[in-house]
Length: 190
Figure 1 (tube, one colour):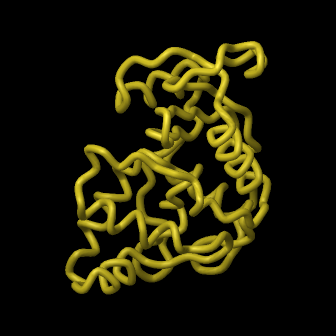
Figure 2 (figure 1 turned 135 degrees about the vertical axis):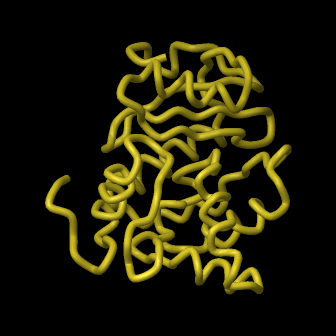
C-alpha cells in the first residue's frame, strides 16, 4: 500500500506490496517460496496493484519477507541504472506455459545494457520462425523487469511492442536508464 511504510505492515507468507522505483511505483506479489508477479508502473498506483492482482487473484498488502525485500532492492537498483543480476530471484512459474518459461530463461540471461532480438531468442530456441511466439510470450511476462523483456527488440533495432507500464515509452525509458536503446541512439528523456 503506497503511503504506508512496508515495515508497518505484517509480514506474510503470501502477499503483495507496492514499492517506489525511478520510473514510478511497481508492484510485487509473492508466496512462501517465490515471486508470483511483478508489475511495472501504471498511470496510478491503484491501477498498478489492480493489474498485478488480475494475474494473481486476491492478495493482502503485507510487509515483504527478506527474499522479497531483496528482489525489491534489486529491481530498484536496475531501475536506477545499476547492473544488478536478478537471476537469483526465485520465480513461481506455476501456470506459466513451458514455452514461455524457456523464453523467460533466455531473457533473464540478457545483462543490463545489452539487447537481443525476438529472432535471436527464437534462434536460441531452435527455430527462427518462432520470433512472433517469442514476442507473444514476452508480452505476457508476469515478472518484468526480473524477466527483462524490455531488453528484447524487434528486427533492425526497432523497439517492438511492450505491454508493461505505458507501453513502448516505458520500454525505451528502461533501456535508456541502462544506457542503451534501439538502434544504439539514446532516448531524449529520462
